[in-house]
Length: 319
Image 1 (spheres, rainbow, N blue to C red):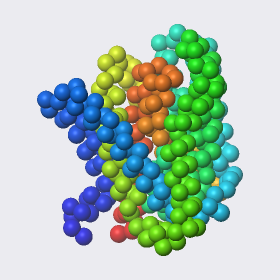
Image 2 (cartoon, one colour; image 1 turned 90 degrees about the vertical axis):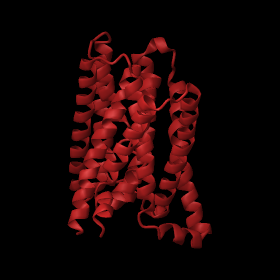
Image 3 (tube, rainbow, N blue to C red; image 1 turned 180 degrees about the vertical axis):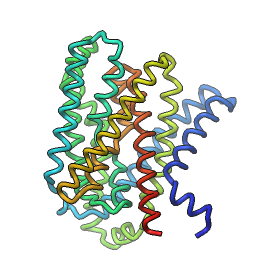
Image 4 (cartoon, rainbow, N blue to C red; image 1 turned 45 degrees about the vertical axis):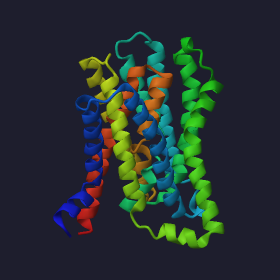
């Protein structure tokens, strides 16, 4: 294989991350771009990114038999861990509402309760894991996340005037259409358009490379939020970065441990460790301290670095 192509294959995710960050930084700091153009670009990304994610999920779901979507014992371990840590840290925020570490604690809460990334099924398939058990967990953790955040936000931020049902339906509208619609479309195609379904599942790595493009856009959005967070102090940045790093390491480690007990290590690790960081950013500035949205950005870096290493090891093992 051509050395350049081999490098791009082995390091697709880091290349996508660097490209996304570089493009935004050049756009923001070096190009004479008007405010109107920036707004137009943001609107284009807001349309293109969901289309890419929808396409990626549709392809991945086409490769999964709906009969394989069922509970696994490690799902209970993962859900319990995420809920317990979220509630314990939330209790600390409640007991010490004026703490100088409140933003760091809220960042940790978001990183631990944040649902599995929609792209996790793609990487799980790429790593040789069980995508069906991963998708099952993704469905459940999204519902659990919706209920957990909707319950705790009115308690921690009563001055915001957000009720349980306001938060619940707001999160549902944000998450579930992008998760459920491609799933049901894949089921319909599998049952009623078998020739097209066969064509879709014959595409070996198409979903992965669509994800790489979506990742570039996600990193660009992440860098945008970090750059625009002008109130961040160095101490706060370090605190958020450490909280997100600890959350990332612990969830990948425990997810793999839970999965390994039931011969599903890869899916367990990705289910807990790979997060929907765009959702984390949105939850931060919508329901918590706006600065906590930066946690999603840092987490995006950490989990994609680890995923890149996993892919490198997998590709190296395959020669």
